[in-house]
Amino acid sequence: QVQLVESGGGLVQPGGSLRLSCAASLSMFSRYAMGWYRQAPGKERELVASIVTGRAANYGDSVKGRFTISRNNVANTVSLQMNSLRPEDTAVYYCTAGRFRLGPGLSDYWGQGTQVTVSS
Image (cartoon, rainbow, N blue to C red):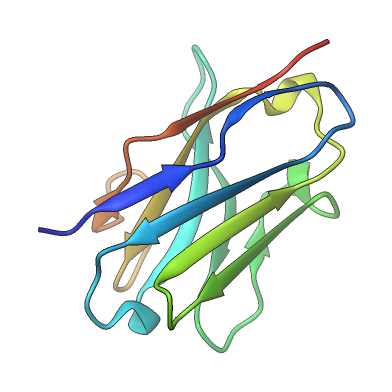
């Protein structure tokens, strides 16, 4: 059974940093596109960042220059370093994996999500 388990969420002040991690029980992990999506109350789930082995990472416009995604194909993990956090970054963050595509209705697997709250 495939599992994506997120960790690292929490409460942080504006301007602070958090690091999210996702551990994936996927065989042939390196062949999967991995990504982070987020969903705030009343809003649609949106792309935060995605990464494919051997290719440049892709970021949502609102997080470019502040967030960095990385993957470890030996440990089967993907991480999201979030800096200069803003209140509008508050959302549930989901780890996702797809053999060919990522996104709502497209990804093969989703994690349970981890809450990130940016507030003073």
